[in-house]
Amino acid sequence: MITVESLTKDYGAARVVDDVSLTVARGTVAVIVGTSGSGKSTLLRMINRLVEPTRGRVLLDGRDTKDTPVHVLRRHIGYAIQGHGLFPHRTVAQNIATVPTLLGWERARIAARVAELLGIFQLEPREYAHKYPHQLSGGQQQRVGVARALAAEPAVLLMDEPFGALDPIIRSKAQDDLREIQRRFGTTVVLVTHDMDEAFRLGDRVAVMSQGRLLQYDRPAVLLTRPADPFVSRLTGTADRALKLLSLVTAGEAAEPGAAEGAAVPAATPLREVLADLVWRGASVAPVVKADGTPGGRLTLAGILARGRAG
Amino acid sequence: MGRLGWVLRLAAFGLLVAFLTVPQRFAPLFVPFTEYGAPPIYDQGSLLMLALAHLGTVFLATAASTAVAVTLGILVTRRSGAEFLPLSRTLVNIGQTFPPVAVLAIAVPLVGFGETPTLIALFAYGLLPVFENTISGLQSCPPPVVEAASGMGMSARQRLTAVELPLAMPLILEGIRLSLVVNVGTATIGSTVAAKGLGEVIIAGLLSNNTAFILQGGLVTGLMAMLLYDAMAAVERRVLRAAHVA
Image (tube, rainbow over all chains, first blue to last red; front, side):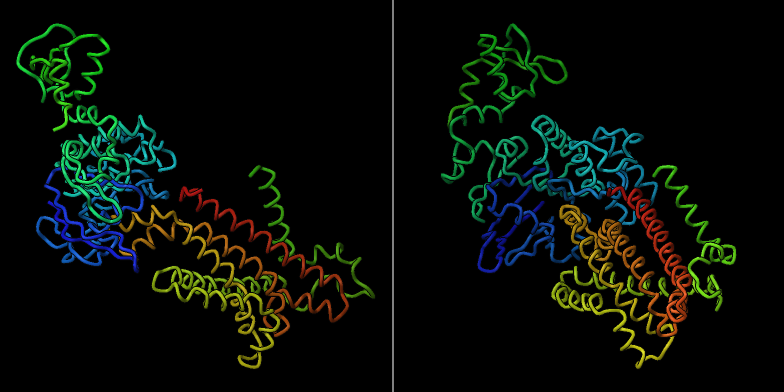
């Protein structure tokens, strides 16, 4: 669990982060979103002390981060940044092995971990382990960057616009992968982005920052239905907020008891896609099928629309 | 690098070695440059020994300038040393702009004749290229790479040795190459203060009005400088390829 208490950062007369407090529960994803200059990256960098706060403190599982020597602290916090920051003179395997090597792991353990991570990130070890970063595509470099951040099995992973440099298709795949890996390892993730869609897609909770201040920190649905500040609704966008709300609920969560004719919808599909599908087919009801193949009830057009209503 | 390049390189090296070991064989070539039956080949000492002494002086001086310039370059690119950057730059620039002959003139009364004043002059003259290249090499490390190194928990020293220096190495080597080659030429002036070196041959030629001596001294020095330049460039390409920073 990460507890941020009244964090403030001043650069000279400028207050970059202004009295921010928030808590990230273990194993969840918190996304900090804001425009450039909102202080979101500075807030993130105060968690692993790349930036020292002017006031306030950060607790990891109840322990003040100030009580641990800074390089030791950072070796136990994963860190992935935009433009990946891979070491150009080291192979993929050596890059991933960076933190385990710093921690003095045994060679065999490092090799096993590197192979495991390459497998998880769909990079065939025999083909990629000995390549250099410049020999990889942008998407592959980004995956190696995240793999490197996760190498020493950190409980906390900090990400600063990790997908910023990727094209939309690769980016959405990278987001799905991150979600899956995060669930698999139970990692607590704090991710910074300026992309609201990314925030909604990844965040269990989303923190909206503007001019150094935390405007709202809540579940995505609450940000849409009860924005605490005009800036929050401007950032989330009001034109398609009903559809955004629908994209936060899955078919399985919204299914009603009963059966229906027609093509079945997988339970993990967001309602927004189910709605689009119903409109496209001119249907008003669709059966839901669970991941294990058993029937999971049905969805009606009226039921879906009710989910997109404010409040 | 074609095959022709290697043939030329080997030929140049072979020529140099042959001339230094059996210079008398080349006497007919130099006879046209002598007058009144003066000796066509330098005869007041072994050319090979002079060439080796010359190289020894150059290597020693360049090694010293490299050690000092790289250390200084590292210090002034650290946050704690940044304020010394302008001062160090001025000092190193003085070393370069102050003529080596003037350094000799000042050094001789202080340390006496021989190798030492030459070493001092070459040392001062060779600082600048290594210093400036070390700084640009360290400053051109991509910021995300340096930030990632810190963010993953490398100490300042680990970051320097494992990330910054390897990435700066190609530029540092280029600086060393420049120093080395410039000093091979400059070292000839050391003979004016009785340092062993190829300058002796040139000065002997000037004193006795023997163009053949002047040519021999100049050609051997030039050939050594070219071969060294070439060899260093090959080493740099090696390092570059190994570092994958090309």
